[in-house]
Image (tube, rainbow, N blue to C red):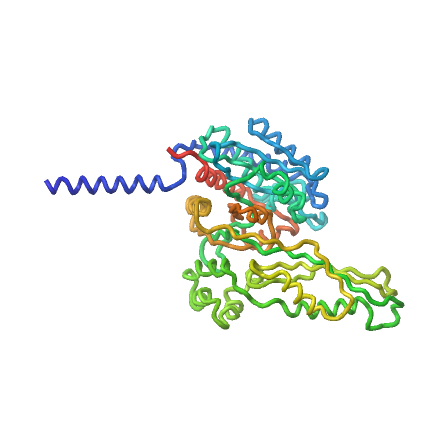
Length: 476
């Protein structure tokens, strides 16, 4: 009897465990099969057409581009709404509803792009040429590809009649590249009831190959970002003839003050987000880097790491508040000393930095002079998104499923995104664009010859769909 019972019990146990494993995955077993070749071909046409709309910010006129996306969604019977904050600044919201009382998933992107110097481009920035397997255009990465990934996900859900346990929304807004006051921030402040999501996915985190020497792909998923603190500095002096050098020349006063300020960048401060990220990758690094990454809070260790494994400037920018001189303006004629000199400072504050104390330190370092400091954009406070729970776990599952030899690391971006206004409302927002970009491709963002490979677009579409299915499709 025992000989018969034990194998039966063992078989039952194995079957039970297997069923639990299958149930624990949020991928709906009833999800339809997708013809990805057909989806990818259709998406490429939409992508190139979307890129040809010149949505440069300023002026961030997105009306025509939004009308184009809206027409595609309307044809499929997907509910859409548009909202205009200022003439030409139009936001699109599309919805596939789920059960009542369950907040939806929001797929965010922005339609505006930064300016270009056309003469510096190999391909015209608004022609969306295809060459060498890439689509070349301003906005190819930042951020129109992400909008197309969301669009194709919405189309696939609708066409295949996917039963949802949670609704899905798509929002495409203007003005991200100028701070978002007339885009996502305006939507949150004036039309929150039009979105009100459970969680959101946005730009801000891609896959990096062999990041910090670690073999494979590391997805740096943004759960927070440095706080934008843009400043306009003006100093007055004594104007006069250029042939007579004098110490009250406002250019001289400003240059000396900026030298004092910039030679003393704020001290290193290791945030919890940064420490957690380094702890997660430390076991993958050789010694002594592995030890350094696990003990950054110990005296001298962070400096040693900066000289080695943490030498990239984009990494170091996450270890302190930063001050960058980005604009200088003074004078109107070579032989005339002006009365006013101006500078623009791009300051980025770590989470937890006292903004008032930062400003006091900045004023003290500028020193004596008739300085006027004005905010272009004030820093805001938003809590980091959690690195556990439904949305975070879904990201990890999709990365493991769709990308070979890939891992997920919680990250903080140096640049600002629209995610901060969602986080300030208590909504977990994650910077996650499922593409893999080497350093050379990342350098093209906001630079010349921005481009995205067609392979990256295709894998991003599938991963976005898979992530949405994981979080929103009904389980059976």
